[in-house]
Length: 401
Length: 157
Image 1 (tube, helix red, strand yellow):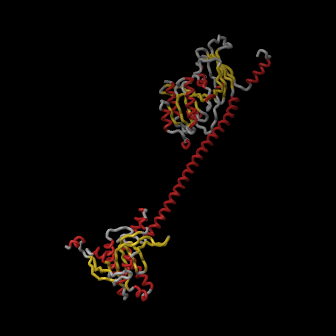
Image 2 (cartoon, chains in turn brown, blue):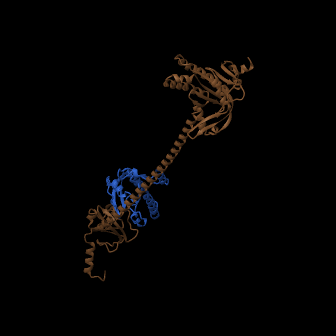
Image 3 (cartoon, one colour):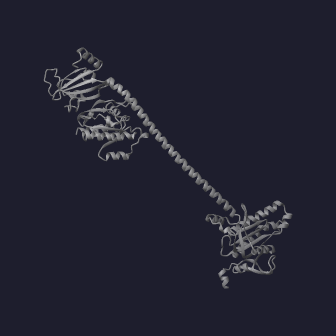
């Protein structure tokens, strides 16, 4: 400042200090307030008293004295509400105003910087507000991305479930189709068994020893000609409704189902140990059921009867037909023989070949019909008629007791 | 009061000293000084609270404000996990410069439950070293009085 005229120095001081509250404190080496001056009121220090502990009168001094370094500055301190000062500390130089030496004293200058602090605060506020907004945006974006990812995962899962569901529906539809096709000629339980096992190879063409049963109505043609069509349909409906459950209960394979004629065979496609016995027992059951059914019709004057033919032997079996239009059927002499025996049988008669008769004789009462010439066979065959089932145990019968 | 910016240091002091809360965020520049006299047992103790400007940039942190401090309150914002890291870094710097001063740690804004991002496990980990750590809310006052009282007891012991 030496090369500046006093007037300039004075002017500079006036400019620098204009509008600023300036206060000062001098604290002695016992940390008591020695003296104070300037605009003390601006900083809430109007009541300070020399002689008392400095930090108790000016709380901001708490812990700062004695000085660790000098000079020392603590900038931008809001000492009282809304009044901000830079605090300048230095060890006692410049001489005390009360005439003491000043050695060991500490000077504190409060130089107001409220306008500068407010300007800095406005700038900082904008910067922090912007930073906070960016942080919030980042958090929102992250949540949005997480929600989006969760949504995509859920969608993928849903698509996977849909595919699975479609596959399962297709599989089940296919199974239902296969079951319904099989149910046309198998007992429902057996059809489901084959489908659930997944093995339909049994339906391929093959040869097997079967017992074939043919049955049809006697006098049906004459009845059809004289009765009303509704009566004919009623008779056929009752006829089928009676026989089909019976066939299924014996686990017979229902082959042909044309008008009043039915063909059933045993031991195929599912094997059974005693096909002839089952066929004969079914035939006896049929005859009893038909007798009850026809009783009413015969009382109405219609001569309706029922006959059965049974033969046993090897046949070729398998699916016959083409897609959506096929049957499971048996072809062979045994089939023709059973059909012919059914044709020959009188009302209430069950005609069986000698092989069948031999298989069931232990528990069946049979009557020898003799040798019959069957169309399609080169030689006559021995035929028996089933009178009924005996109550005798098969083992006892075999032993002759 | 130490911590990153906008974690609620000024609001915590206001809640503690004046029992009020303002929704408006006003950044602190430099330092604000407040005083509160509390009774610890039958002994009145004056707490001079230095509310320092929040700094995320540790290089800008003026640790000279801590000269003469008896203890400090470390504050983080429970809805902004990054401020927890900042608070932990500040604590390391303070300890390097001033040694192991007593401190209390507040994870603030506990009232904003839908945005809360600090797990119980993180609290347990912080407490493992014997730290005094609590969630707080300057809005509701939860945890505030406890933190200052506990710290006051420790610094005057």
